[in-house]
View 1 (cartoon, rainbow, N blue to C red):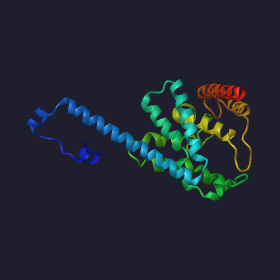
View 2 (cartoon, rainbow, N blue to C red):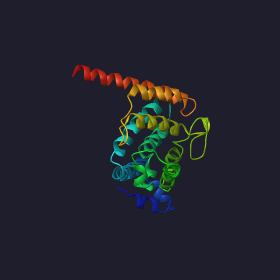
View 3 (spheres, rainbow, N blue to C red):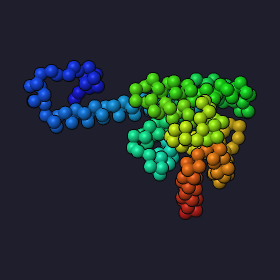
View 4 (cartoon, rainbow, N blue to C red):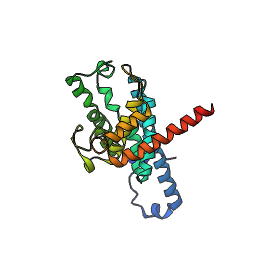
Length: 235
């Protein structure tokens, strides 16, 4: 089997006999093997970065996995193509990778952040972009991470983008990340009931959150609550 280094370092053959003797099936197999190796490398990179996040914050691994599942479901409902869904899944898993550059004293503070601390934690989306854009094939993922705290009304960060200026994947991550933050327990508060969290999403739809994304996600969240309630009732 050809390794990545072998394939990438190989010089194009100028011998016409090489080209004549090369089987189309062999060429297709080599391409498929290369694609498989690249996908394995991408998956391993995402896994390694997520493990690093887990070491920083024990809740992050579960949080990111949950976000990725929801994000892909919303993306599918919105008709995103397969390659965009792959990037969306990676962006949802790694959206908080930049928090590795934020001091633990801020991340784990049990109360309100002061203005200086707020500025520091808001840099995490830029830190995440800087890390991910350096990885080949993660350029689009990096942009989703960079803009996942933008708002439809232009009052988000870091760029103050608004409406259609914001990548669709970033809009999806923004809605789902906000919902998950609301329903999850924190060291300084209990999580909100799902019904209250979805009410707040609707209330901020069109200002903080994208209308279409919010509508689709609320439908998914409501359906999951019904399913959980049925399981509990049966038990």
